[in-house]
Image (cartoon, rainbow, N blue to C red; front, side):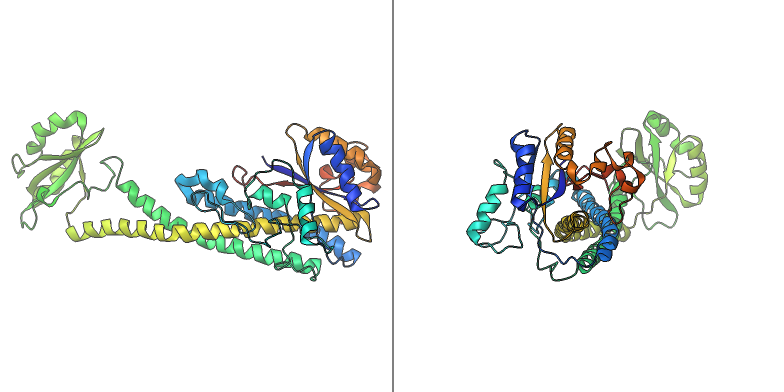
Length: 439
């Protein structure tokens, strides 16, 4: 599981000092995590009442956007079918497209600007931005540009989609409408494609399987039948393999008016054989009755070249339609997975901003940091962070969570945390594993 912790702490004299203190303690000294600055632009604060109300709504929006993101990823895996092993390389962020063979298109940007350069409130030169980006990049980071870990560790606010001049509520509404539309479109597209796939699978099942149930059209030929006769008809009979000899011995005696030596073995599978028999039309029902007594099954089948051709054409048409829909559907899913995932991380950024202002007050002065805990060090990392920021809210660490403190300190209006996830610093967990995680 690829898990990240998105936290924020109030700025000391500068936000850089907050970053350095935390990074030295968790990464450089103890190797508990890999850390990245998480850049959030200067957003409009609004009033305290607005922030309190927005805090709870953002919690719901967070869950909704994550759910839709995972639904899109899961359905892409279903659509890829036997190419599902390529799902991971098709789940890209920032609209980087991975082709079916894993080739990743390069990200755009200024010639001297690294991809996904963080947007900061301050105005910096391209060289300063590059140095800052390299400073926060972990050595040995070889992830492909556009993959999910790279997008989140080099997060930059999308100014075009989510203008920071808009209020926080408006930005949240933009994301909600955007993802809601994707969710609605996904339901429509998946229903259409699933119906097509289901129809094709049903026809394909009839082409295989036991002779008792499968479609016989591709096993028989015109010469197997007496056609256009006023009196005679040819039946298809399913005979158990163990009863072949019995069939040859008794089929002419099951009723009168059987054409002698008219039976022929057309096909057989592991359990049954498909035989023809020619008889007079007036004894067909009597023949079926006596055949059933001997456990010989007469299949209902009429040889009609036009109908057989139409059946084959239907399968061909469905296969063609599925191929036509497959490419555009995969592209739509890839593009809209990226849209949802990027929107989800923006919701996380909004939540960090709102909770940080509610916690730490005005003027806005906090440092958002993304941590990737090293394996088996999560508990130790949590203890180190609790000690480092215990002075922010001692009640959060006195007994492991807020429930162990007095009731007054437990009730924190506007903070959208479950009590078990309440720490002295703002904290959100982000799991970017979209392949194995379930919706």
